[in-house]
Amino acid sequence: MAIVIAIETPLQDEVRTLVAELNAVLLELTPPEHCHHLTVEQMADEDTTVFIAREGGVAVACGALKRHGDGIGEVKRMYTRPSHRGRRIGEQIVGRIEAMACAEGLKRLVLETGDRHHAAWKVYERCGFKRCGPVLDYADVKWSVFYDKPLFDGSASSAAGA
Image (cartoon, rainbow, N blue to C red):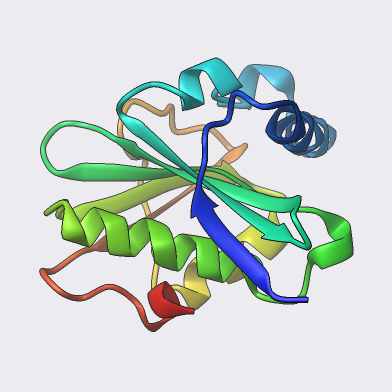
């Protein structure tokens, strides 16, 4: 079956379950005080757009764009269920996030991920992100790894159309 990615509200039971799975995985890899989770209620704020990937109508992955001042967008809440990993769904979601950020005139995408999230690193690096120092107001701690990607008008990644 084909993967369909669309903007959806996080305030639905199926998305809440997906986010709960994400939180459980993150808490296995990172101490709770160093996890920077947005709740589904925070994900529903006006400054955040949530993308849900579905296969056969079932939610299998998610990701979000959170907007900050100074033309900065942040990639948040990226997760793909284990049953669907290896299919580059995360890259497709990042592509959609990047395309939206470019269309809105954002100048840079940033993100924070964990120091033990090797699979996430591969997704971000395949999408053209580079490691950098701390971004936004995140602390420079051993548990965090930071990435950024400058955006240019019309430069959405090739994954954006996937």
